[in-house]
Image (cartoon, rainbow over all chains, first blue to last red; front, side):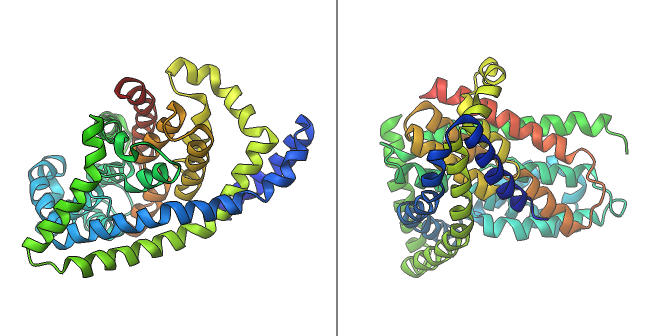
Length: 194
Length: 172
């Protein structure tokens, strides 16, 4: 069963039991009818901004910014993925994946990342994730986004004074979590049994 | 700092439009095409948001979220993480739309410029849906034994959460 189905069933069940036990059950009825309106409000107030940023990012992509960023990233990626970089096409897919992630182009990043992962999987033992493939997945699970536009849209919709003022904090945390992922990868890659 | 933050969205938009025009891109067409794609994204998340925000609202009204917060408060307090963000941290690696719903509820409830609201926003912006990424990439590459990828990725997530609370306290 889908994990969200389990979440929904568990959340609703827990709410009823908890509401009765804690005496909050009178609020439950109205709360059960408020979420849908909140979702519609969210889509109406943040949806426009999400669309606008998607448009701006598309202009950047068309202007060749993703390709320029990918070229800048290549020397770093050669160091992180020495074996995979020997193949030009894998390196191209890798750098396109990371640069699309940096710009927050999730729809462009995933196909490129999958292409890189498939080519990297051919290098090692079949069915077993090698060091570099694990590293690619860790890099993609640690969000590295220069403009967190969805979050900014969410904050703007709730009336934040400066929706983008979280940028320095997001950059610091993204960089920190990527470093922590790389560090963990370095340590675990050495001690993990094959 | 705040002047820069205020200018960033306008600057990024202007730069994109000017660079695009200089490089011969049909800026208006590229922009509207991107907007249309954004609209598809919004439409795709709306159904799950309706269901998930209903669940989060009921968990909140029943007192279950407060109980979870209170149960984890001693541990999270020790780490300097606002305990109100506990449900977000639990859901973030598992479900992207779930995390969006919980973060949205936290930001609406505590205010976008409160420390809880800011921490929730930074957490959401600096982490990814780890288990979804792992499933998609390893699934496509035909990998059965994922070795240390999941522990290393969760390590990165946890550092992101810890740093988010620190960064909001130090930088803002």
